[in-house]
Image (cartoon, rainbow, N blue to C red; front, side, top):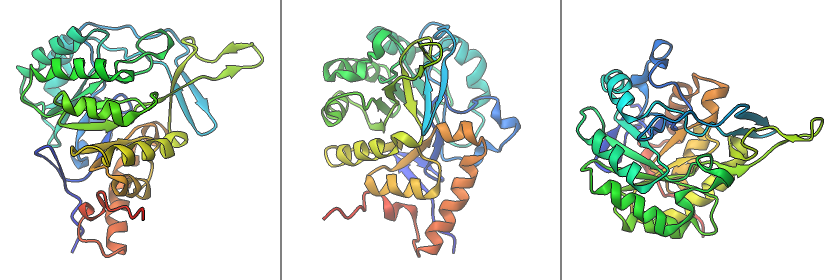
Length: 304
């Protein structure tokens, strides 16, 4: 008998725990090259209330164990998303999670209000943690009070599940996670990128025009695992783990640490077909270890 890969997130049934992280995978667009219906869920690139041009180039820099980006959530705004992308995305079978970002609390709330009228959206991911929205890498998620304000404002406008994506660029991520849950977040996504920079020694200049960017990929996996584990000990809501995941073994590490599902980010850029491979390998791993269900691994880390 094949192992059962299905998991549940706030009432959403996922056929497996694998989904792309916001902005790391072409949605819509990649359905021409891959069957998106094999994924556990779909996560669209973050959208803002109004169109954003993003940051000036260069916006991407490769590092020895990951990638720096300072894209700055370039997008065409929520109305354009509703009219153009959503009609294409709502026809796929995996639940669609729409990511919302903003520069003001009111922006998050107004975007959610517009989206709430639309069909085909299963849940929202509130991106309070992008380090590229403001100069110096500031984010709402660096403050418990600001995180609470954003989550509470969105919660007033939706009956759909709400996941808050948190930043590791804080002293105590548990404090921020608890603030998000107290404000009404039904689940959490951990983590966004780590604030970093890279320097062109020959030109004596930063590699990114924005100077600072978000570090993702294998380099941040230990940090992400630590955050998932610490937060899972402190809150009772489902956690989506993200940060350097590129294999079935990585997935199981995050599930053991307390995540109920995971997002794949930078690995999609290295290998656009990595997610179906991870799903197939995950099933194989479970069978080899005699596990009947992937749910046996969730929060099952032995730390004593």
